[in-house]
Length: 251
Image 1 (cartoon, rainbow, N blue to C red):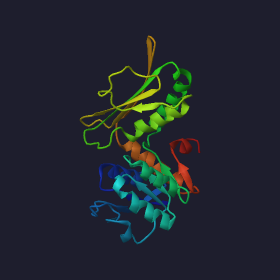
Image 2 (cartoon, rainbow, N blue to C red):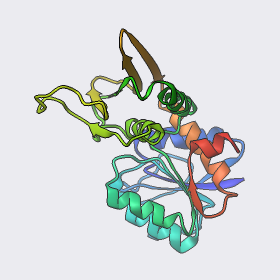
Image 3 (tube, rainbow, N blue to C red):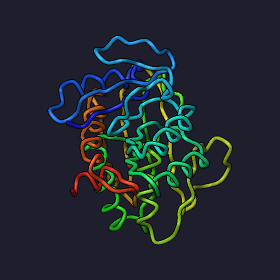
Image 4 (cartoon, rainbow, N blue to C red):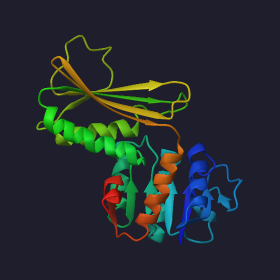
């Protein structure tokens, strides 16, 4: 049994993760870490890792970028693998995560859905075939409470497409200030926020007289929680390094 600590357990995604762990046959919640420090679960919840009496096998993080220092500090001190699902990190924080992966196993992904990772694989294949002659645009839609934009998943898709192109593309996030036609080396990334949209991502390949679209819709946040728990079970036995859903799928 893999003992798991859930960071951000009192948040919406943390609640889904706690439920997914409870229903898992291979993982068990050891404790949670949340700034509110109150438990509505059958495991203890601490305000910080300093209060934890026992060390988990893996940490699952669905919290806030502000929690990264405490998370990595504890993980490095205890050599604990981490499944990091939080988005909205700065470039400096991403560098911190990559540096930590030199000492511990880190599963870092902006989206834990199997379907979205299939979309990425399909988008890369489409880029190989169409990328030189088609314009590429990415549209992401989320609920009105989501803070960061564009989504971490949209950036994952853009990076995967960009890595497949023959020449590096420029990311364009907003065209209202541009008074010129679209250049060929652009990847447009657009954000929509409204209602209770869980998550929708669309990759558009627009060519001469034809358009190819690849779309993924998440109907519930549970898919991300289940993916995170599967990642924790996988990561517990891995050596130091960076891992993502692609490595889990191919394991």
